Length: 145
Length: 408
Image 1 (cartoon, each protein chain N blue to C red):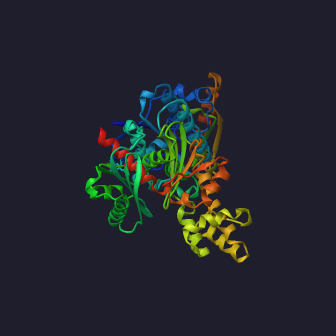
Image 2: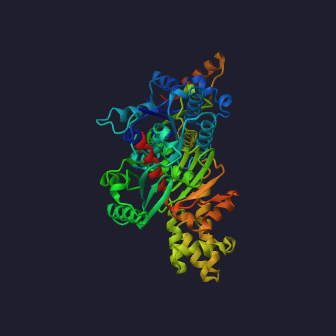
Image 3: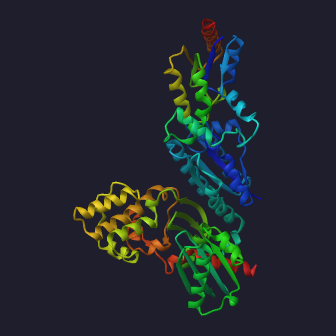
């Protein structure tokens, strides 16, 4: 079993495919769940406190907007944990979205420069492409076993 | 309950969402989020004019469009994005303009960091709420009866006594102990007016120390300085009808307020850099060995282009001025360079955030430093008006507004 990060990092479709193939999907909702199920809720709705942007300094400099650093406090540790990655280009918001384009760019860069196996895919636009899309993911994940 | 629609990107990930809601609650308002559909978000290119890469910004745009389509959804709007995000800065400004042009809803824009606290937002949100809540009071154009106003500022405390639409007494003292300074300023104003405190029907208070002073003197009106100053400015400049822009460069912060018929429509409040404050000019005057009251007249004789300013910073900018003097620059050029530096920073950082419409009225003690309005005129390429009693603007606004409460 490998720990696989997906991009966009909020994609439930991609994480479901990873889990079905017996791997662990690394996604943002899980990081958010850890925060919101903590004993104390300091800052609803996500329970991100001003401490998170400071933790995000590990991944982005202080002159990077606080919203990017706050997001990176959630996504950065996941990238560090990843042993493989699936990156979908131009996925559209319905597939998943960090809400911030600058964060998306930084996440893609950090994944690619980490040196783990990466599967690059284009988002399918029709049924035939979707089948190929799933087959490629399956083959990639099988190789990781 | 006043409903403030929050159109933002990044506030929840910066950990400041709770602070925004706390600031709203403190002034009796509630933050709301206009509901939009996915289709609304996908259509912002056609409804608003542009769709951007960041999903949360598109969501903020879709919410802005929704509010313009249905103004009953909110009483006021706050547009907030991360400080230093270029994409967000463009959209924040465009959303503000869009709402300002297409609705009558007051709008405030602000860029935050993770250090933004409820206290930072309080005056801004209080002003937004006042604009909605006391629209009738703010529309008041004349002062009636005998009232007084106190502006408890960070550097100076000002007071005026007004009778039937005329300023009849003024008092001005440096702020040391907040309550003592307020008492002294009021006493001075009463003395010059020739009236006793007991004769005054009501007192209005504004400025940083407003809560403390207001309680101390049992004030009838305790109000933040954005609405009060804009009211005082248009009253003194005789610009109560139509648009106006009020610029107030204070000792500790600056305000740029876009006013329509005497009521603030949009505003910004700076307070990050001392280089854009009156303090910078005080330091310059001290370095030139002159009194602050002489700096403006000296600046009028100078040319800022003769001095190389490398920074707006109160430390490094002052260093540039000192270097220039050592290189033989004339004191008048240095004085004007300081005025230009302050004006330029306010122009670059704040006046881009409001719609600058004539008349442009400069108020506050710094407006009396003649070089500053002149530098602002050169930058804006419009005539800048400095009304009589410009340094007492907050106190005048408070005395005017509190007289409205007496009638009600």
